Length: 223
Image 1: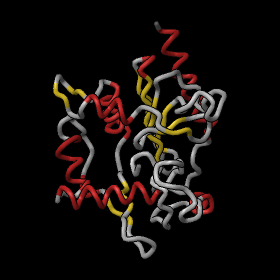
Image 2: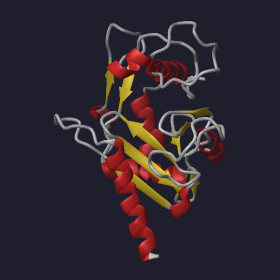
Image 3: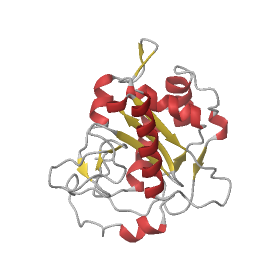
Image 4: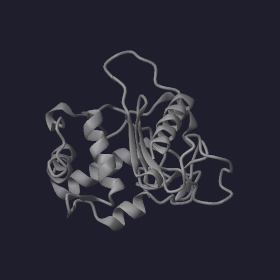
């Protein structure tokens, strides 16, 4: 339920935007597992659970289990930082990642969790986590920390998804306009990165959608 953002636990969360805080449901308004809400508390609590269960810091685990195995060139666990504060005991885990390293991560999932013949992430986990379990915003669905091109139900939100993605697509969507799209239909990954150290506006959804359309059109033309 934490992975799906369906826990029904609505505590204040670190790294929660004002819009998310304003939209947060009242405590005890939904039973666990019955309602999707993009809940930063759920995600932060997952980090606490992982580190206590494994005895390993998330940034170190990512380096050893993912980054090194898929040849990331820029990832440095020392450049990452947890966002701490008084609002919650659960830290937010902020990642700094280059475009080429993020593209490698997306490619790992496009290939079903395999890299150079080695199964890095279980194929079943890739499948489960990128399957829509909820109806989300913008004509999208939500899996396990991944947004999906399709809603969980045929009548959930109706209409075409905001990014015009073909069926079976999914993506990671980070703060400030960071995206990693996986589009199996086109055997394609697309990464959008912004410089979070500069006071730049986040790209608008229609701008990102337009970029995806142009890239997909160029790829189809070349074929």
